[in-house]
Length: 306
Image 1 (spheres, rainbow, N blue to C red):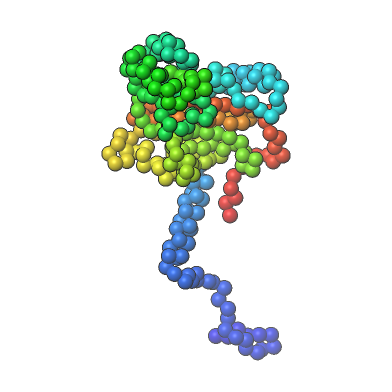
Image 2 (tube, rainbow, N blue to C red; image 1 turned 180 degrees about the vertical axis):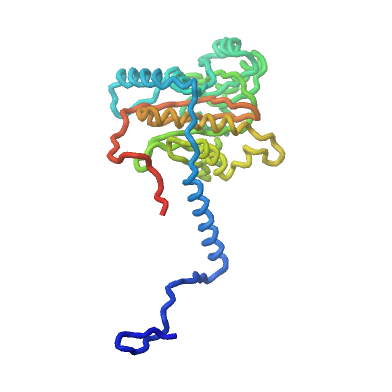
């Protein structure tokens, strides 16, 4: 029926303000429905964000004193990368243990390092231009005795160059697992961001890295390791043994606490982190300090929920 206009005249049919979406193809309708479902899931998660766990073994005061001392010794206000001992000490204050790697400037020092660490060992180059070039053969694993170690050292220097250029180290072997990367850094727009992905060229080329804002909750950590496309490798893909994701989540939460407690820690990189069926091993780490950037906005940063 028509609506009555002023003066008694009958206007056209009443306008129904409700709208029914129409799509030119079924695929677009399905994509729209999927986005609506994802948004509903995000809203439910926002209502239950999880919690930031407490750890009794964290030495927050000791870390603050160490950071203040190191910043006071450095004249460069743009920031600097910590030495290996300082980085390991700072991470240890937050319960993150990094495996010892001993320098091996020649075959004799390599043999001495292996004797201290115990066989089997790995011989690795640490020069920046070779550190992530596994294709060049800069890593020799499962060296069971001194003879194998010396032979590997000779092959390494014969193939890649002088020891002074390669900066080789000896490290005790750890249980096999999945190589991963844990990072945290300050983003100018978002603040501190925690990142996770698998180590290696495929993940780097595909950009298969997940991110969460700091401080990360237990739910964030669980979602972080499950949101990358290569996550099935962590959960028993094609019959392989599932790895210790609980230990990995705890590591992520401890790194998140470190950068949240101390804004002077502007970046952390743990690479690789070998996650085995039981436990994990952090094989290398770098930490960068700088005076914290000024923030004009206050309060937590989060996406709007409209």
